[in-house]
Length: 111
Length: 114
Image (cartoon, rainbow over all chains, first blue to last red):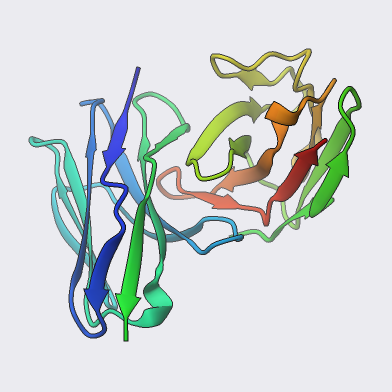
């Protein structure tokens, strides 16, 4: 059973702070890793994907991947109340187009 | 990414009935998927909708309960058959992008079974 683990939270951060969201995965053959944001009552929205070890930055978001540790994270700089949502980590399992999703981390940014 | 729409957006159904959910993409896409998101839970893949052939179901999901059609590269349907209250959930379709198997989701169908 291929698994993706996330801390369910909620993670509370003050406005302007850095939010750090973490995810671990069990399938060593996984190639691509995705972060989705899901607002209450809405469908998941793709924020970023990463496939190489290291950091990938896009605006206020930075994804970090460490394949040796089977660990992927998402940093949100200058957090805003509008960032309050559930963040889903998803992993592309080996030899397929399928994604396995973590349970999600609830982020609350307090103004 | 292609724009995805789903119909209906929500429905309330009686136990024992069936509901067909439609997913329409505004351009041709290779892969389409159906997910279920139960209240307070994450997404669970039901099946991959294959164009011109039978869908590929994940463990725990069967064709008799969740028949899927994909007649062309822009359209798919999911039927939830012989519904029970345990089928109350959000059902989402998605398609893959062109780069690294990223997926884009439709707005979802919120189903309540009484």
